[in-house]
Image (cartoon, rainbow, N blue to C red; front, side, top):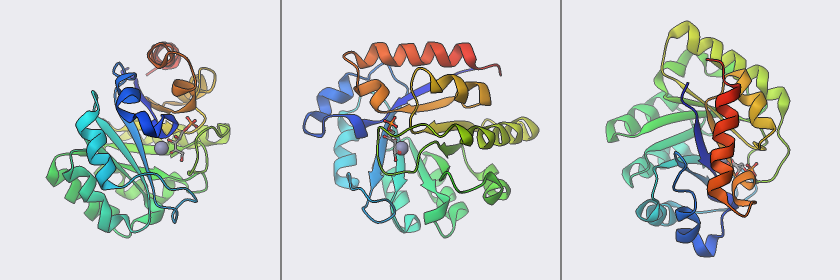
Length: 221
Ligand code: DX5
Ligand code: ZN
């Protein structure tokens, strides 16, 4: 099975973004955490900065929206060129309508679940999405501890994918490192976000290849 490693630029140097994007050119997507200090208690960047990141990045963008009123703001990120836009079900009134607006622009769409949100909450609409993001920390900050109890949810999503025969990508985000990636891959995840485990090392591109090798070894699909 194909595995994808998406480094989170939340752990990059915000004053040297072009340099830090160039250091992850062997990754699959650059994971861009958009936070508004409202849906989560942290603030990062908005459309103007993401547009510059898009212009500078050697690889496609995987935008993870952690903002209020995603119905209003999400399609704008597809319009500025993000190849994938992930919504939080907890912050979107009509996720299916937003997914169809983003698909019409030509980008992939994901839907994210906070640790306390069960998969059953989105099972009926899951077919409208290209990716399900199972958060393995409470969204808001890098460097938190991986919540292994979320692996049951990953297994549920993997069972749904097997049953429906879809091409759904299963993403995990938060606390992913060379050890915890084994658990996530074994549970059925194929798309791995890692911030501190990539940018916290001297050589991000070696860290990416190391994570990719471990994820491949532990995925059995
Ligand atoms: C947290 C963000 C993550 C974060 C992960 O809200 O969604 O993408 O950057 O950072 P690490 O890998 O350090 O847990
Ligand atoms: Zn994220």
